Image (cartoon, rainbow, N blue to C red):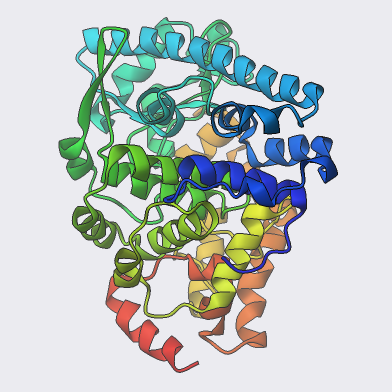
Length: 444
């Protein structure tokens, strides 16, 4: 790992995580001067990284009693409380999830658990070790209509909507058509507070073989209820998407790297199968960068030969350095280029006509999409006014996101963004153009 000039408190956190997740299991605690640490900073940084409950378990497990006695009691109590609170919250979330799973099972709907609900239950196997902000599950798209109806019957509804109002206002089929990856977040006052229902793998930069994912899924059991989970290789790819494409290593980046390292350590990985799947998903860049960061920061058990075999043709150390900075960043970083929203539809390398065409299509969406967006009636006389309203809204909210796509080509060489900007480097490329782009970039 490059010298990140970490604070002593950040070094302590890193040593703790490496002692639990690292290949050698050596936390280097002998290098830590416990008396000089600001334990309030340790707590604040652990919260920022999303690993406070984990820190408590690791301290109890890895530090000798003589070292624990040198840690202020108030700090130990705070991280212990975080662990207990996480355990109670996750236990309630899992209990509510099981209720949903039973209803779906009785209706013949198969479910794949995603992200936290999979990791907490079957990878970490400790309800208090990892926080869950929401519950993500995947069902087949053919079952989506029935699944949403069942959730409504159970009392779930849209955030901010009353159940009675939404059943009158929402046409489920049209709502499903309006979202290309998942339903809007659902919630229940006494159940799951945030439930995301997907019919494809979320956060993936390209379309993936959903049928293959279902075929490779493994059967597990929660409280006597059968459920499917991603195969270890698909889970690792999904976590790579989530860390790099969704959050760009900045939002709880350390927690996401811990997820990846733990998956490798506890699940065992068929590396040949992983490489093959990453090629099919077009995820080589995401996978390489997340595995490399996991290895360099947390000493994850990633064979060096694997890293070399999946190393992209065009990458420089600026990309890796920027990614590491984001993992340790003490503030949220807003990238110059949005990835997940636009994919390869709008990049600085596209022609001016393509870029203008994309913006035009974003404004003048289909009539039924506009009606759903603004909750309009079919007979509304104001529908064309809402196209103007959408234009004003997009200009207000999107101008600063779109301007870089138009100005960047004027200020830089055509291919330089892809080798110098992390967010652009992560953009998926057209497979037919990938090799040609690699040759051009390799000459820069």
